[in-house]
Amino acid sequence: MNISNIILNIFIDGGPLFMTLILFCLILTIFFIVQGFMIIRKTDKPAKKQLQLAIDISLLGLVLGFLGSIFGLITAFDSVEVMGNPVPEIFAAGLKVSLITAGFGLSTFLIGRIGITFLKALQDNQFDD
Image (tube, rainbow, N blue to C red; front, top):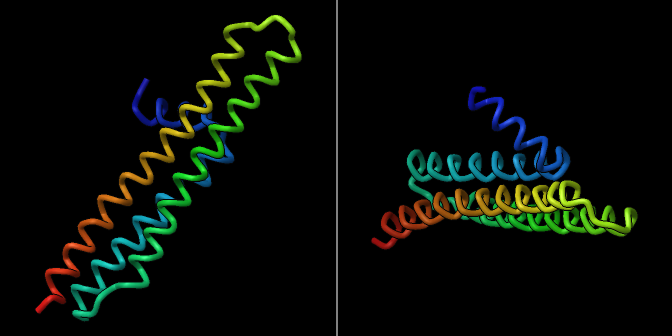
């Protein structure tokens, strides 16, 4: 099994809706960070708009991850409630969904924060003069 199949399986296990939304947030965050670096490099102007958009979208990815986590937990508890006698496999599947979406949301936020920190540092160094 290659790495792309593993990533695809994790993506599907996390729930395609929330994982797609979080992935979209990650892509947009990276886009705005790269755009901010390009603006600073080409025009010597601060990239305040791109920086703020990257901050907001990375935070949105984090919130979506935890929202997906809540829905995963609700699904797990609903299955326990319907069955009456909890089956560990079904309960574990709901917990897995909640951890995958939360982890992906946290990863999106972390990647965004690292890029945002570098962009802020570059802006501060360049425009303090």
